[in-house]
Length: 296
Image 1 (spheres, rainbow, N blue to C red):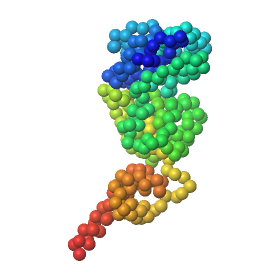
Image 2 (cartoon, rainbow, N blue to C red; image 1 turned 90 degrees about the horizontal axis):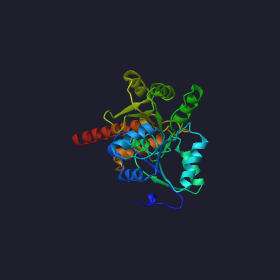
Image 3 (cartoon, rainbow, N blue to C red; image 1 turned 120 degrees about the vertical axis):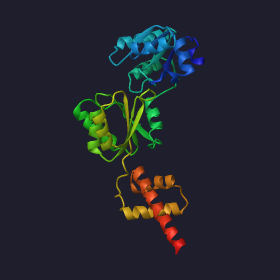
Image 4 (cartoon, one colour; image 1 turned 45 degrees about the vertical axis):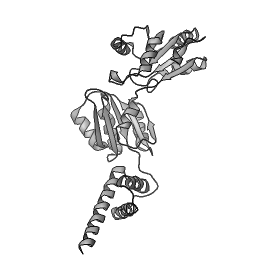
C-alpha cells in the first residue's frame, strides 16, 4: 500500500469507516488503520469499538471541534517527524461535517502527503436510494440550532434549483422538518434513518407529510433529509389542460413515460412526481382515444 510506505516525512491517511454496518469497511481502510503509527479520531471511544471488532491495537488521539491549536500543531509535528497518522471521523468519510479539515489543511501546508482512503458516506448513500435527482446537489451539513439562523438556513434550502441534502440529529429532526414544511409544504422530500443498520428506513412524501409522520412516530437514530429542487422561477406553471397536451405530444414522439416526465418537469416547473402523473394521465387519454377509434 503506497500511502503507508515510510517516507522522510509522514503521511496523513484520511480513512473512511462504516456509517453503521461494520461489514462495509474496505480492505484498504483496514490496512490503513493497521499500518498507522497513530489514529486520530473525532471520538476515540467510538473508533475503539471498531478497532476492537477487527483486532487492531493502535495508539489513539482525540481530535474534535474543541481541540486546541496546540494539539493540531503537535499532530503536524509528528507527521513531519515521519509518523503515519490515520484520521477517522465518528462514521463515514472524514471532514464531511466534522473538524478534520483543519488537520488536513495544516498538514498539507506543512508539505505532508495527504492520502484519502475512500469509503462510505451518508450523503451519497442516502442520495443513491432516494429516487430524487442527484445530477447536481447541494450538501448543507447540519442546520443551525439558533432560531434565527435556522430560519435563514431553511429559506436557503428550499430556494435551491437542485436537490438539497442535510444531516439532522434525532433531538432536532422534528423541528427541522416542521420548519421546512412550513416553508414548502408540498415539496417532495426523503428522510433516511439508520442507514445500513438493522432498523434502516426511508420515508418519502411531501415535507408536510413527512413532518407529520416523524412528529407522530418520534423515531430514533441519525437522519439524512433530502429535499427536491425548487421549481424553476420566472415562469408561471401552465394549466392542467396545457400540461396534458404537452405530455401527449412527448408520448406521441415515442418517448418513454419517464423521459417525457423529466422533460415536462423541466419545461413546466412541475415536480417530477406531478409531471409523471400528468404523463400517465395523458397516456390513458391517448389509449382511450385509440380504443374508441378502433371500435368506431
